[in-house]
Image (tube, rainbow, N blue to C red; front, side):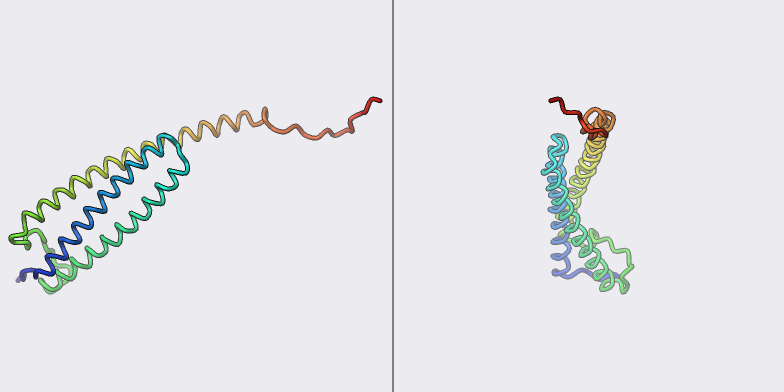
Length: 159
């Protein structure tokens, strides 16, 4: 038998879902900002964006870990086992519409992040191709622009 959730459990679930939503929005924003840096090939800005995105990914992992812990705790409390399939939306009762709104909003933002990630990947591929072209040009013209070797015989001085 599945027991009903306590007010604290509801509050914690909503809090975690809202944290996830805010974080995914920040990821979307970071990806959008990163596009400008990639298009302009601004190395300093690209580096800053990579650092920001890494920090967001770390935050996201922590929130997802907390969500999994909360889910297991509720499952164990309500079903007697941490592996119980527990549809949280079904346990929300009167808070169901709010839960539904949050999950729909999250789904939309996640879809936006998937799109932005595909765009970001395409921009990175384009940038890599551009860098390869420049590297090939430099490599093929390296002989033309190298410092001449020192003469092997002494230069004769004319008096």
